[in-house]
Image 1 (cartoon, one colour):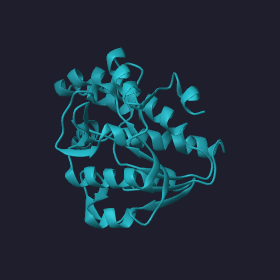
Image 2: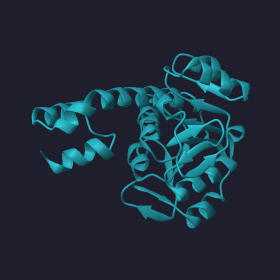
Image 3: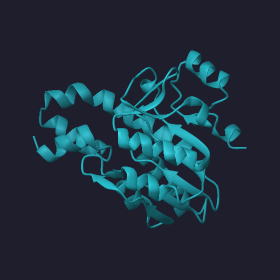
Length: 231
């Protein structure tokens, strides 16, 4: 089995459905057992990305975090920009992948800092100092885990600190995550629940979790209710 294909499957959301099927035909047992889960996760991330892109309005200054779910937001946002459904955006991001997707459609500023070849993003003290120069309308953050006790967490401490800085510079902060991350713990705390305006999440969120978010005055935004939350 092609090693590059394996690496894309387990590390990169840009792996296409035809590529996945090609890998399966080559007989990788690990891919076969992961295939249905991965397809479901991709669909949920696309759903979340589409909903988040609809929160963006003309002329806004945005921060877009690195990560596979925010990457889907960039793809959805690029389509809106191409159709001129939204205009005159300035996007600040720490992700090289996000730059590649959006640079043809709007102004994009890449945050300076220490580059991670695995995550294809930048973070660190220099990144935080760089971001401190800007006032943002909205920050869109990813997360590796969330609990109601600890808030949103990341496997990278540097990325979690940068996310915290992006939130502090923004008028509004939204966290993008699939519902399977509720109850998971990671090492670095990015944001506490009281510091965000909403979570953009898939429609499979449990009713009990939705109630807990709403009791904390945090909007629960899905593709099903995006129009109401965007008023």
